[in-house]
Image (cartoon, rainbow, N blue to C red; front, side):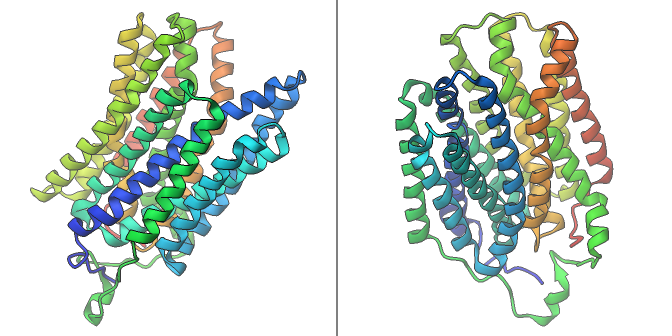
Length: 415
């Protein structure tokens, strides 16, 4: 079937969908960065540190497990019950968990429970946003929409990094949780699911002017159109987790950065948010002047993977803090092009099921979050404190994924 793009065009969606969903990402990403603070309190409350180390690993495993399962449920629920209800429930769940986390911080099982529930809410939310974007936004405007969404998430991370260290941690949880509850109220008051389908029977076999290719579930799972996206998403997250998890450690140990200068680690996220919006406008402009959607998706993904890969491979040669921040900012700015590349590609190849394909992709892309930490630690230890193998591995993964995506990606509906 074909969606009625024009009646519910960009000007309507800019006010009611893109802005609100961008704020949703802002709240989500800022809330995620809050979690290490209560965990440190729990660890400090007992001398059996090994128990708490195991507990933190359990939190990650449980969060990933339940988040992965709920993402698929959320994508289907958005189609069945409407994105308004599902996204509202998701944000309400993680906001309430954020608010009550300080109460649970002194008891590890309760803390794990709140973390798992927060993961459930996040797992419901993002696939729902992708599903709604695919349904309600025309192809020539998708890059901007996804760019705004990703940029808002980067702003949320920036705000959390800048302000949370200067607040009492329980106040930060209450503040960001309350912000999420305010978002829920605004969402319920201002957004309603628009009609999507048109009644013209002749258009039922068409989508975006082309035939819908009917494939089996086995072909869906094995189709390279999807796996090129999944692999690109995996590579992007591997580099991002290297930066998020290990950049402060690297700067302090290798470049002797002090506590005050650590605020500079927020600069790459600011650059990422600005570049994400800019890349979205550039991509849509290229489509509007006649470039094919596939060509634009491939170019943006090449920029988003090869650029950071080169920056990370060269990063060990940097010998001072300002240059290090500059290189990582360049890497994050280029990485933001992925929002107009493979992240937008879900809506191109599976407009009716973009939430499901993104849920699968995001599940696979959580694997770097589990592996990146221990693999990095092992590489640094095995190389006697050298970080070159860590960054070279990240660059190699990015380059491999870029080649696969460029040669195997599609931009026409296959599902």
